[in-house]
Image 1 (cartoon, rainbow, N blue to C red):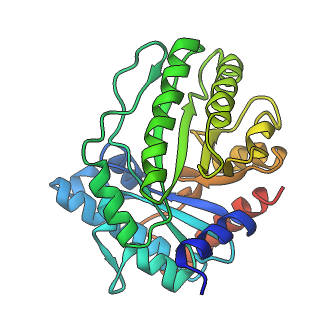
Image 2: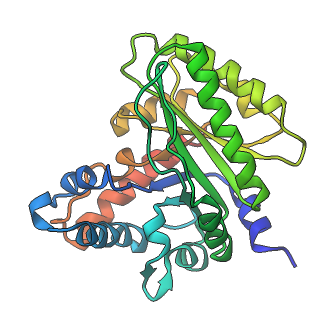
Image 3: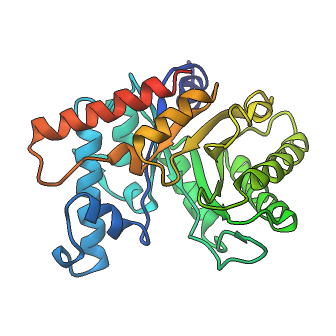
Length: 298
């Protein structure tokens, strides 16, 4: 009998589709809710904020158009892993009811900028979170850091941090998504991408045959710039973040990059409002999913 992990692996490796990023954290949740039509004055505590954003995520995930036919996986925020959707744990609901592979965001945010980059904050509770995720049949993780300038020393340090933590995650039986986001507003974005690609390939080439990662990368200035990463034997999938581009521009850039698929957050929920009735909400979400799905098929 094929294990659930292997079923999830095959889905991500072989199926058409994209990854939905539903992992807004404490810092980004107020903005996500405000775009959704819920003002900070509508909730009076962090607990109420998290309850409110869980209702938003639940509305998205339970929509008839949100399923494994076009969506490979969904990245969850840690808080979501402790909550239920329609009486099932959120991760179990995704896999059992929607055939969507559950993933979990594990980073705790960013340090202040140094050497042109923002490294990840320490993750002292990582092992406990990985154990919880594994017990809930979560397939993999995601962790984000940010590059703001073409500083080679800083970029090497950032990529090394990502791969060091990734190896811990692999040892726990999960597949890590490494996300070294490039600031799309950086004047030297192309130079950053050249340094980043070199650092990524250096770390990838040092992995053993049984160490597999996914990469989540900012859509590059040069089309098909990350082909060497996409074809690398240690890379399960390379996904793109929208990074501040609106959905139309993000989809246009994604379509041009062969072999990359989307892992969009803001671009996925663009146009969704709390005030929409169910018919309007589902139609808007379906339109978003279809456009991102088609852009991910190139």
